[in-house]
Image (cartoon, rainbow, N blue to C red; front, side):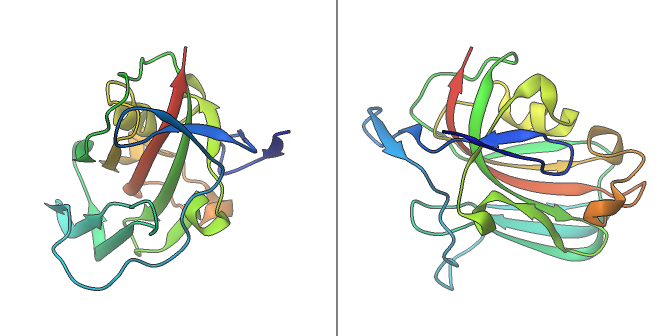
Amino acid sequence: VAAVKSSIALAVSVAATVLVFGPSGTATAAGSCPTAAPQDGGAPDWTLNGATGSVAVTGSTDTAAPVVNVTTPFSVTQTQVHTLHAGPGPVVPATASVSVCYMGVNGRDGSVFDSSYQRGAPVDFPLNGVVPGFQKAIAGQTVGSTVAVAMVPADGYPQGQPSAGIRAGDSLVFAIKILSASS
């Protein structure tokens, strides 16, 4: 049974169990996002110098949440998507409903404003029901992929989202693990 959660205008439902494509491409049951901090060390999977500031993203693993380090204030003039680790599954269509684990970070101050990793549970939603930058990050990727996106305010919340501490003009960064997709 899925419990309905409202999460920064994503209006998603959390599934009790979802399918994840493992390394062999076979489906395995998974019902959580890792909450553990990653081990120290190693280079980030992606670094990006913005119009101001910079971001360094280390993608999640099967046992650890992602790390998003921001030199503030961080902003971009164009939405940037980077595949941290390509998954073995099928390509996610733009019209899909997906199950993901994600962390959202505000570029203005580096704060985490929303994280399914912190809650320990993935979220399910149709791609046409989320902000454009989230759609750009997921559509066209393969299931099982870990991706990061640095989005311009127009692709996030152009008017802001005060309940999440997001102001008009804030660039946002997401680290996302795509668990499943259905048409």
